[in-house]
Image (cartoon, rainbow over all chains, first blue to last red; front, side, top):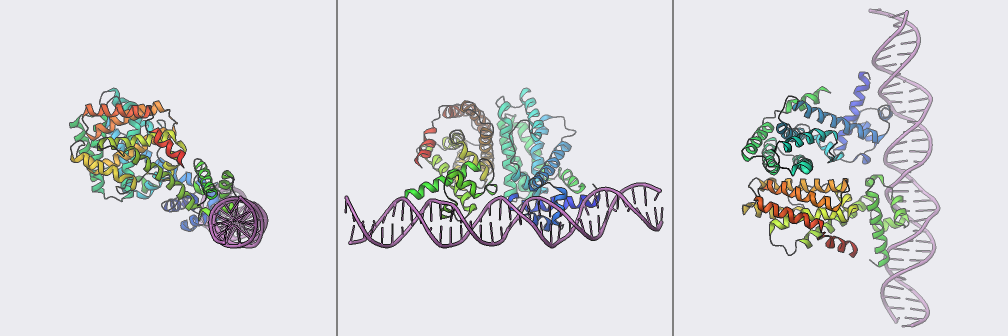
Length: 218
Length: 218
DNA sequence: TGTACATCAGTGAACGCGCGTTCACTGATGTAC
DNA sequence: TGTACATCAGTGAACGCGCGTTCACTGATGTAC
């Protein structure tokens, strides 16, 4: 795809993303998309088979980005518990530094609880290790994923809905980590340490670089 | 409203509910609704101003039902912790005995985390009492609601998505209660007791009567 | 580097149909006497 | 209880417009020589 085509393609995706913030895809006429993107109506069909494929493409692009962020943040981390916790932190960073995309993704693809969903398979593996090694209590083995995903999603939604500041969000991450890691049965001293670390990771924006780099790179 | 009108009204709502299981409201032509309800197209507009009002009416009816179930189950319960836990159990019972409505509600109205949402205000009050009395750890005060709602919703979604049997769901409730109540800081012996009670409440369907009574009463 | 040609994306007017909404008419239900 | 009338919901054909999709044409980009 040459650069002109790439520009048009991205303009449509971006415009679609903006519009998806306000209303569902079925309530968005293609006229509105092309007007916002500044291209002719016919161009839309050079790039997407139909409106559904368009919506799919938008959500896919976001999902792939999020996956790549998580992969990058966890690239050189060997402790499964740190990887586990960083998943929450990346999600929160996503909500803070790329609000529009985060909101569109949360709305369009309510996170499935399936263990074999691409976003979950890594998390679930780490969870198994943590139970096997006795860091997490045995009850976490089968339902830990549902537990964890539910509260990560709830936390992210709260940050997005209430447009929370970074500092407030950081504090919230600390408390959520205390509640959830205690629930998993992690030893209290370790919980405090991880929660403290998590709060500062968000407050200091240590994952911000990852998110913004990828955002610019497109 | 006379009985003929009431019948038509309910036929439309029921048909709409069935169709909402498969696709979003914008993808459902009114022709399909009236065909499924067995009434003429014009009747639709005797009852609803437009399609959006129709969707709203469906979700409202479900929300009111769920609220009344929770109110009924908690009517003569004075212990805030029991009320709290029973909220999860009613949600699960809802998913088990009235799958269609539960699924439509979960899809249409992703539960907000707002403290003043009608469904949340009672829960949040109980939470405050539990923190003040030292049953829950202090970190639960501001973020306990998000934590709790997130995992209740995640649990319900899992049961609906995977069409879980009652026994499996009951076991899941037990484990989720262990994880979450431990997270809140409830004393271990009490956690075990509540989780055990919760599992049997679902397995024996003690809230089923409430749900089915209201369902039939309409 | 310049020219000629092929390819590929962009353009926007036109089409047409799906679907929301209306409305004049019919038939049922409720009420007055 | 029966009759006459008013009210109210049901009916479905007809309308019309919003919007998805097409297409013939234009202009830009890339390539061969």
